[in-house]
Length: 366
Image (cartoon, rainbow, N blue to C red; front, side, top):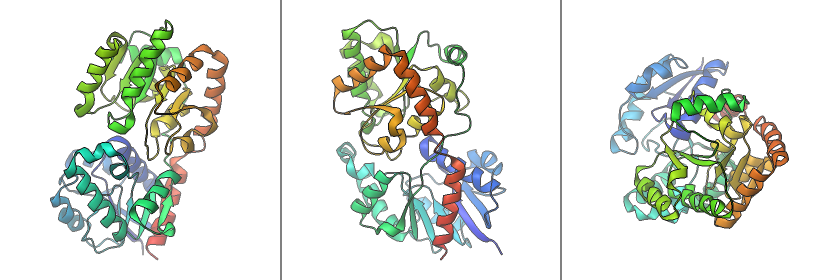
């Protein structure tokens, strides 16, 4: 008789959404011995049903008291519950696997400015880590942080890296640029940032390095910042004005996933200046598209980039400007990084990720 596995699939945005989608899709294709049941929001039901025919709708918002009872009620009778974030239902009776992608809310001082958010994250991370039968995370860096900050045993935490979607693949750069230009109105070559506009993404350092690069020399590249984050957007726009780079910086809202591979492929380079990352999916996605990557030598990023990225100190504006200048100056370096990046990206697959999740589920069930 199959064990019933229930997955909380209400969060289908950003990196957690990508992770959850691929987990559901992979489990649907895998003869894994589980009867999979998904809990999702009403707006996502049709999408989730293509991977999982058993779907329950729970429209309780993330990070609310209501989800603490609504999710266990929807999951009643399950053999194992997997929650892909730390907002786990603390009164769930069934064994539970949780995925903690990072503990940035505990380690980054910027998050301490909101006491309410910090207090919730601290409480939930500690309690969820103890409640879980097993914890999954996405990098060895995050595993070390979880063990140290949440005081859980090493054997309880499994590292399972993310994969690159099959849509992210090499394509003709000119063709990709024409599609991006038509869709987004970008009229010249560009350097690219992809991610949320949160403090640890370090976008202000990228703006300053871009301004310094333009002071040093005349370049044709614009800077495209593809992300979201209403709280700091105005600050970043003001920083562009102060640096006098506003006419050469485009802030672009997140695009449809069908266009995103072309946005990567059309870029001269992806720049990832983060001071902290649980994984760093844009690094992997850009490499899979054949785009050279410049990223900070911080947190999990060297695990993802391997020897295929150009690294810099995230605290150094000059170091980032030097890396961008070096890459733009050398066709040979760009080509070498493209080839190394494609090889590096091929090491990360969602198929292997799903298979390793199944091993963790079986271990959690004893």
